Length: 455
Image (cartoon, rainbow, N blue to C red; front, side):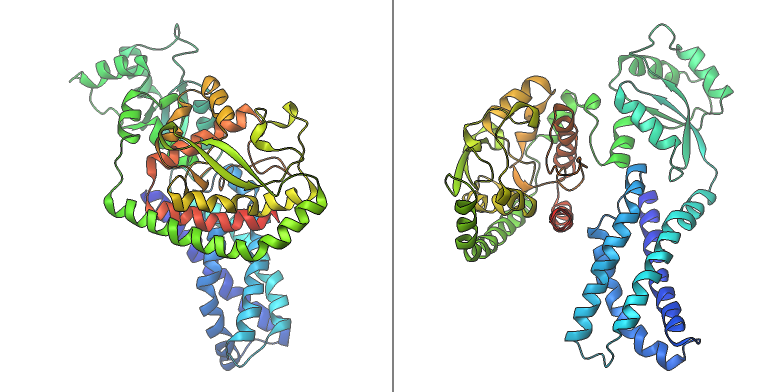
């Protein structure tokens, strides 16, 4: 948590500095001279006011996500997108508020200068500052499965971590070659191990490390960190390999505080009521477009799985050539049911989901939570994904942690394979583990960006 706070603080300070530096360079370029104090003052005041909104846009755009390799791959596109939005916000505010200036040309110059500065800061200077500030420790990883290899590559190929994994013990794939307690202690000493990351659900880890750390003669052994905790902190999702009885007992219990329960329900009712009023104004035009585009009803119903596996019926706008409610086939390769032209835009804008706000008012759904699945789909996935029914231990929602974090192939807005659905499930488990009012607010803000980016 301390590392994340430091990372976030450094990024925000650097971004604010880039905003101010870009303004200075813009004024110098615009007037071909160093800006005077008066010129700088009349521009700096509104720009400082805008900074808070611009930082919020950066947050919504994902520029303050954890700096994983995947996040850095998408960074340039996010910077350009966010700065275009920020300039539009500035144009509107300069028009509405009496700042006394209307710097249209300056804003155009500022757009390109700020993108260049922020890109240079994020791509070169920040990684250098982040990596140069400390010497990386040596870590030992004791874990099995694809998730262990995923964590190993992320840590060793990303300088944001203050340690690197110098040795990996995979008990499930190499049981004959794994060291016992004496050999492990010797290896820790020889490789100068400073930290052990271990999946404590593995029998090997439980047996060997218990012997190792209970030996009073073993001095100077490095501290241990739980594999599940490190994985969650890195990827914002729960590794399926660590989900066991104790995890289920604790995280799936009804542990929500009264304040959270009441606040969430109040937000659900108010938010869904506002969305339904907005939807009522658009409905005549949407209904006409659906009827003109293809044959069939405007609305469809679907039987879905609610909290604790309870069956519920939801309403949606029809977006496909057939009624989705009658289909038990869900991935593209398994169905001839195709999305209509109007349906494509309804799905991209999530307008097809708005009728479910009635289910929110009834208490069947929430605005925020794991997406509810069609009954037949949920039954099929429960047979192939371990612990899949755990996602029904909380009230399902219209948008969730998975919908705002998972990356899909271009043109897709939901999982299109068993593998993508399994990944989606790990994000759902993260939400179940960490659900809170602040996390719900974060998801709501991220949803704005997710919807806008689709349109």
